[in-house]
Image (cartoon, rainbow over all chains, first blue to last red; front, side, top):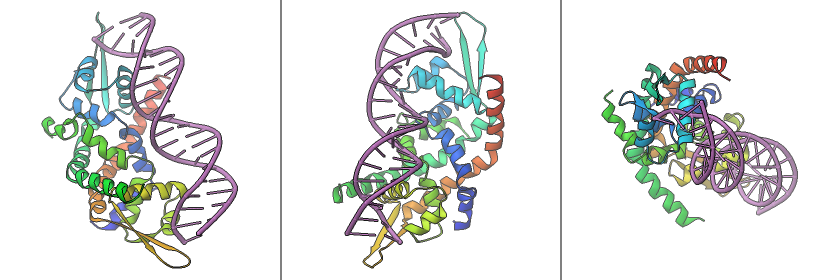
Length: 124
Length: 124
DNA sequence: CAGTATCCTGTTTGATACTG
DNA sequence: CAGTATCAAACAGGATACTG
């Protein structure tokens, strides 16, 4: 890894990297995207498959994803209502870098956790 | 991309992915790590090279990075004080997945921005 | 079923001033 | 130089209740 490449991150004073972190770095976004990687799902499917999420946060996060063009929302004029969510091409394209990050996590988080515990022990 | 791979993200109900998001998904962490990819830097170097960061946030973020073992902090017993920061091996290992994410951002953020603007126009 | 509407909480960030 | 201390603002997220 040549350090010059990190200009991708530092380039514009962090505007670009922060633009995406603002979008994906919240509690539920990546989880929803990863869940939708299975294919089209209804609101209730997502609610069931994502443990711990509230209706409010599921709605909010889906709206943001729709607004950003990562998820397509289709409403069927039926009673009772049916609403389906699918990843767009852009949404799908987020999966590989997200997996790269997840892979890093799997590999390094144990060490990080240990380091953090040792730091806490040394200091306050 | 096979959807089964997203179990890396969804696996434990999002615990692992959230463990890393909690660490790197704040306003300054990735920027500091990317800046330190140049090599060892002093506090004042970082302060100058990262536009907009306050002393407080630089200190706080560096302490977290040190605690997590991503950055090594060396204090020299001199007057005036000199403190140097370097990426550890773990810290360096974060660069490739971070670049993957940055690459995705460069490629897709324009489209996302347009999509968001269109959404705002359609709705409130 | 698929949401909205309110209220409430903790956390993150920033501004400013001060110090060994 | 390399921080610390204090205060205040902003925001994300959750609990609960209600609805077309």
